Image (cartoon, rainbow, N blue to C red; front, side, top):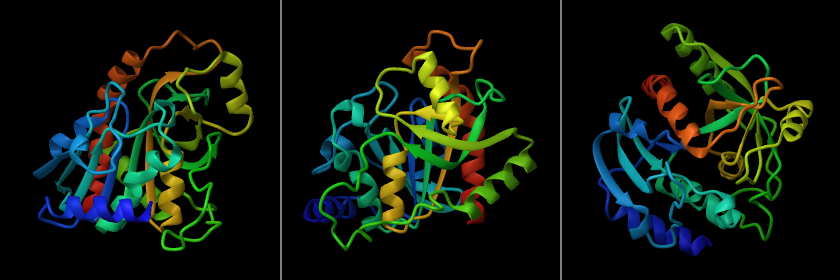
Length: 269
């Protein structure tokens, strides 16, 4: 895999004019942030050697290089999921490429279902921890160039970045939740009892992404900030039938606040 990562990195470097400082992964229905990126240089996933291709509606499938909040960034407009049939090494491949491109911080977003009874649809939740119910992306032989065999996960989400986001949210007058994200394989939405179980074990939201990318980023010593948009509720009395289209619509409605927070965070890094 190391040779593939280096091959992909060299291909990308030959086609963009600068080295990104921050990587951004955009979740379902959250690709609108790229409108704020200036001086854009775009590469389609389909043209990148060794890169998977997004197959899910709401995930466009492009790498966007440019400037956001005064920082040089690379944004993934569309991510990859285990439920698409990719293995975990493919799902997390772009994170490793970002590291080799020079990324020093990773910002991640997702749409998720709230299991905390204090949450409402459209809330933003800063992720401060996760529970992984997916195959771990580090299973298999470990290449020491990527990092240690047993990476510490006591601070998977960077405390300084969390504090900065909360400060900015307060200044902007935004209501921000904070909590634990439960990562599952999907692609089914959860049953009422599964929602109940996720709450019992300590979850505040549940989704089908993010955790594998965070694990790989932390193995490679990249600080991570992650935020969820609550697009549906898995709370007794508030559970309704939900569709992928519903998730996209709610995500798009709330993403402007998320974009403002991320952009200001970048300015202050």
